[in-house]
Amino acid sequence: MAEINRIIFMGTPEFAVPTLQAMLDHGENIVAVVCQPDRPKGRGRKVQPPPVKILAEDRGIPVLQPTKIRTQEYLDELAGFKADLFVVTAYGRILPGSLLNLPPLGTINVHGSLLPKYRGAAPVQRAILEGETVTGITIMQMDEGMDTGDILLPGSLEIDPDDTSSSLAVKMAALGGELLVKALDLLRQDKLPPQKQDDALATDAPMLTKDEAAIDWHQSAHQISCQIRGLTPWPKAHTNLDGKWLRPFRPVVLQGEVTEEPGTLARIDRDGLVIATGQGYLLIQDIQLEGKKSMPVDAFLRGHALETGVVFS
Image (cartoon, rainbow, N blue to C red; front, top):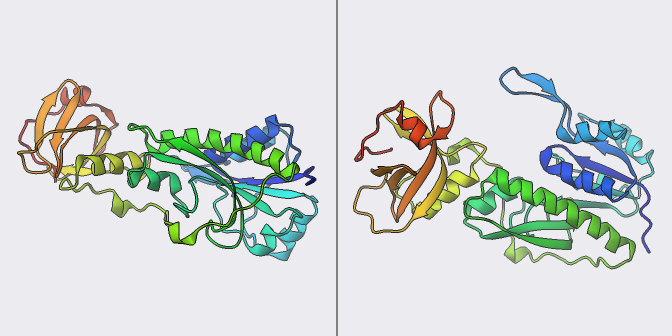
């Protein structure tokens, strides 16, 4: 039977908060929390603490925010907590083997995909961009590779047609917390046998770039819908109108034989803008013009004239 009496948790963004909260609610003894340093955010660039730090300090847990993680001094500091296990959720840095193997039970990770699919930094976004209908969480034993460690406990989750990366991440974070505490219970009972990943089935999930945001209306309505939803909240898909970028949101795929040039505004109704694509039509319900806030299309049209036949480039 595995003894897990002391745990160090490593995580930084909002996605990691439900995992830490689930462990605390489960009565786990979190002896320290490690997260990235406070950073400036927002238009005012005011320095703010990471969400995980806020929860940890509220619960009186020591917080470490190292700028360097590959030093002997840092390893010695971690070793001083005498943790049995490290748990990682979206910490945001590649961890060296010397750190991963420091506790007796090693380090386990809450990863945002059904491994071996979508190894990398943006698994939630990539699943939507690739048109997946099912994704999930994998509790895995970490090694020095990029999400290549043994699978301990997977759990699946459906992707709804209107899910964005932000809405899906909320659901996946909650699932991650549930699976992690279940995995800890099974680990204590020696009922969590590791399973090797099949590298032949592996796919990558690299970080998003702004270059992926430009919409090509010659793609299908389904592909463009996935692009819009997968790139929300960042970097946000965009098209152009009269030299200004336009960001569409809340897309709905409409079937029908397209007779217009892709990118043509085919129809305007109370539900939004219906735009021709390479295959099918796309209904856009919310829109954001350069320099303005996002708003429903009917509100946008009250201040901006649009006529059918205009082509988005």
